Image 1: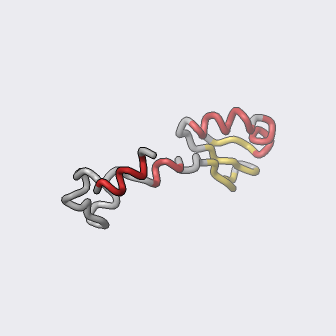
Image 2: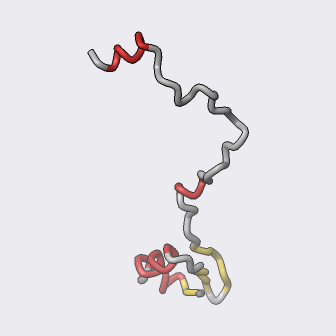
Length: 76
């Protein structure tokens, strides 16, 4: 969608709602595009499940019971 600078000033909140839903808004001055409003990437999308694959290894004894002296520290 393309709007004039005047329309953008008058309807910024409405335009931002549309942008948040994925629409791109081009702002034009005298009919010439000068800027584009686009949604910022969601911060959560920077982390993908499995993106650290191969960067660490879970030890084979990970689920083994703790040694008695360490376990006792939790039950004082």
